[in-house]
Image 1 (cartoon, rainbow, N blue to C red):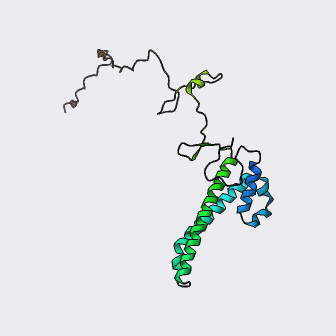
Image 2: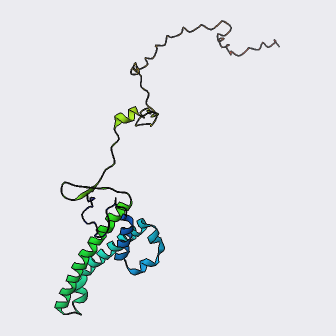
Image 3: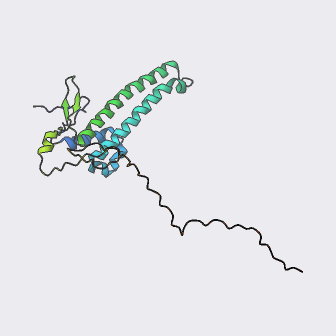
Length: 206
């Protein structure tokens, strides 16, 4: 039974579950890159790094082909005859498609090297297999799981729950009873002011 590979998977590279997947992927990536990359041993030792570099390189080439196609008439029109300009536009279109397909293939290889699993889709494409969901019932049955108390959204502190919690009643102020005023003692009563009538001096008769 042939293993499933997503659309755009490069020819000559084995499926991700094949025994020669990694070796065939490295050979394909080195083939589509410039020959100078063969001088770097780190790319052969780490296929994930090689796939990442190839993806960036091919995406830059795609953007270069698109930019050249947009500016071909203004840049080459004054120097080339009309037929040559149209031929250059065809070159940009053809190479742009080839580079876009290669960039997509490098992206698929990089994802497969990271452990991503592809499953067929009903529309004929491919999608990644999502991780199995974790049910809440399994969490309740799992041993050693401690349920933390809910936190208050306002303060962030654990909310206290009580079955007999009642709303706080407003405090009614107690009426104050006026205290009777004590009469001052006789010793403390104010003395009447003495009259200040001038003293008459008695002069002797002369």
